[in-house]
Length: 190
Image (cartoon, rainbow, N blue to C red):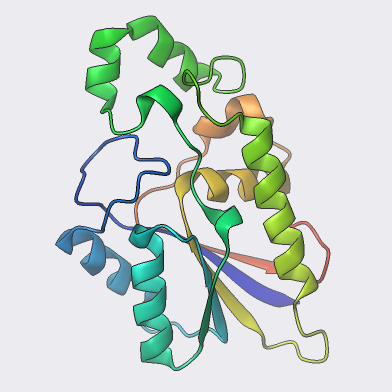
């Protein structure tokens, strides 16, 4: 069994907003959160979302640990459509029922013009399959770090735990939270 760690990016310069695919940088606090989350840990390689709030840290950590860092577009965050860049408070002011329904069931009540949750699930699980298929089965000490977003992490954890897409937002994923999963090639995480 190899270990794959999933790390959500830290706080961003945009603050508490639905940034989705909007490419915002980490804040200084976000950088500190991430360095604290990985303190004392090592990996054999890193894979990252292309968005700078993930990729900038992933590349800095790869350089510090002298390992490779690959960018995979499939690990990017959900596109929030018309809600991109808005805060929850702004959305609640505009349309309280829409945001409440989304929080309750994002599958049935997505953000207007957003990426559908099944599309997010499909691309993330494809990225997961590619990653697990790339594991060197001749060794059991391969450790991979994926630096990504709350949405993709929730998809992997939901798949592991048998949680329905409509309940995706019930899975808590804080900034700079690290999840360590054991897996073998082509397997769902355990």
